[in-house]
Image 1 (cartoon, rainbow, N blue to C red):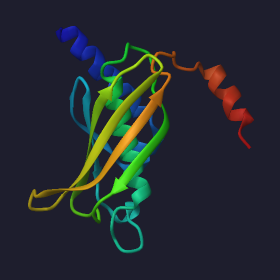
Image 2: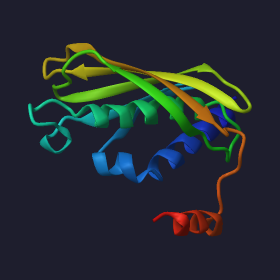
Image 3: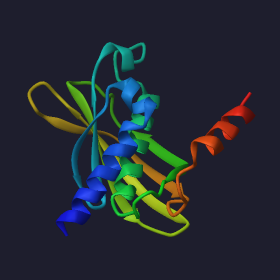
Length: 159
């Protein structure tokens, strides 16, 4: 069981580190266990909208990342999850020291997987409050990663 735990931890870390978007935002991984992953985002000026709150689009990025990574904790090594749809409800203005997206696996599947994420703002005093909740649909979790050549072919098709 320890080897399996180390395998999924390594797998989730590798996928997370390969994400240019979460790297650009300055996200880090928090707690992880099978079916559960936390993605943390420090609140800084670069991720806010005009009123000083974390931008809703940024919240969507970390909700998607946390939910997808939660699904990957139980997926076979080398598989990917591609988000095909997500819905996010923005509940409160998001501000504080950091935002923590707590992703959870809801229903795994061979073709379609459902995951969710609740996002909490953590204040400088340690108080936390719910700022958003998301539902994420992932497809292809049993597919293999694209090779570099296949990835390049897809990129060439993009305008």
